[in-house]
Length: 182
Image (cartoon, rainbow, N blue to C red):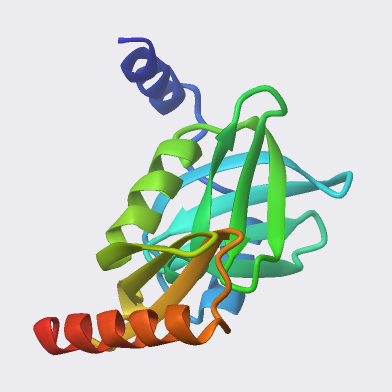
């Protein structure tokens, strides 16, 4: 009930969405004239004030000067909300990490989780020497959706994707999944 009450209060507070400068930043980086805003919040990125906007295509971070950067949902391997630090964080396929601190997160943490999950068509974990590899088929969302499935393999633990046995298992699993998900 607390989250619902918060949304009701937010609706009547006059905060109807991100400001025009933030929306202009979203349009500039996403390339969609009228983006569908799913959630938004404010915070800081490397000590600069930012507005963070979730749209169908991804997460957009717009600073006070109007400079924006975006993260497409299908590019996020893992991430989520860290309540102790009030930060939304994510990891990319190349293991690079990023985050943004939010003092007013709104529904961003829930929407972030929902959209990243929605980009996953299929996923299959493989237990291998040293850990686990997850083979996943991902799709772009919103206006970026071209119908294609992008295939990825993410190693966890000490799993080594260059190990010949692991590589063979990953290629076999990917081929099998690709055939099933044409």
